[in-house]
Image (cartoon, rainbow, N blue to C red; front, side, top):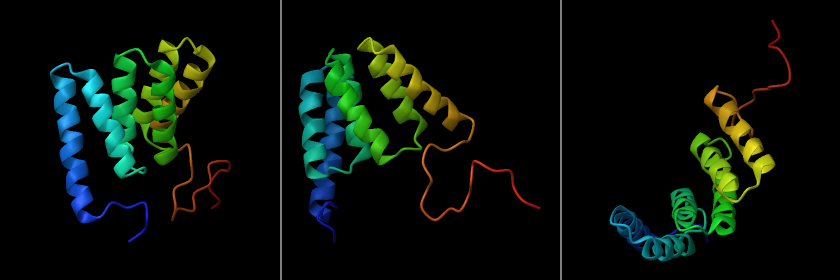
Length: 133
């Protein structure tokens, strides 16, 4: 098992903690949710859902620069995730960084059309050329 993968006990704890944080969001306990989402990503720094949810919670409480940091991490973990780019665009808008918001929004739009932002492992597609007969 790699150092970055949570062990099975940690995985269960991570899932429970993430669910608790999501419950906090549902009842409006945003600060509590932020702290729990932060603990999730401490347990597993590669936990995409944790980074994305952290960014959303931070945005809801007006901590836009921190939301942007979390959103950027989410897009690094899953560069072809349309929701991650859409959310990051929203974080930038809230922080009045319009050029950055437009750039992230374009990436979300490309993904919505079926395109890719990053080459996925195991694929040999080229986006810069027409297919050869």
